[in-house]
Length: 209
Ligand SMILES: [Fe+2]
Image (tube, rainbow, N blue to C red; front, side):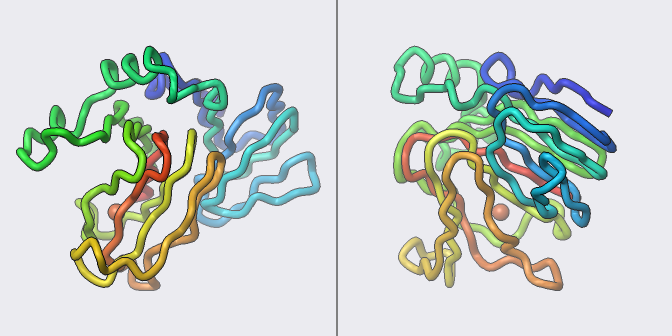
């Protein structure tokens, strides 16, 4: 299966691949392996492991499980005011989504969510540098496996001792095209954690149910 997705439009083109024996990627793209177990083979010689991401350019991939291809994100200039304004106009601010007073001036803006079987993805613009999300350890689905794939700019996932913003004890750095190691344990429990922008950036949230 090879399906174009609309959730990032008109800014970011994305494509869902499932059980594709041979697929040619002609442009630069971020390839995300959404499968929990199976590797993706790149040019028949490099294996991209489960729940990992990387940048590819002009390759042939073999996808036994599920994958996302994010195309054209490398052309997005977040220091361009017109680009930033149109992203903020089209995607919904945290305040528009929740109505909570603490989200009033939040720099987080989210694209629609796309559901692909047991996987849900969306893009999130963080319009300011060094802007942390809320610190949390529970998710709406207590068994969810949550990843952040960096699409534009730089960010990090911080692990925290408590809900106190000064209690950070580890950071998983994210540059464009990368994701982080699992932050859940064998029981599926998470430490207190948050996403944090380093530069103005776009990441893709991935929830695997
Ligand atoms: Fe989370």
